[in-house]
Image (tube, rainbow, N blue to C red):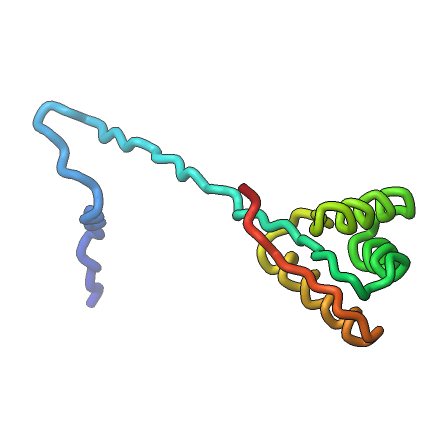
Length: 120
């Protein structure tokens, strides 16, 4: 006794719109997503009357990868204007840089302060 399997008829997926009568095709529109870049934050060092200028230059060279000339320029801006931008990063990287500056200053016994602010 040989039995036959019933013929296979695939089911239509329910997510396709029904075809209009007299139409042989379905047109789907592709929608592109607009991905926004992440917001950027700037790391700012604040001036104080006790932290040595040489320490600020060392921090800028070690933690922010600045050369001696650029680190000196930023240090003078901090000294004269009361604050200076050290770099622009994503939120997590900027917060990590601030923590590194604060830990280095605390370890060296200096009151140097750093903050991270959104870039406008």
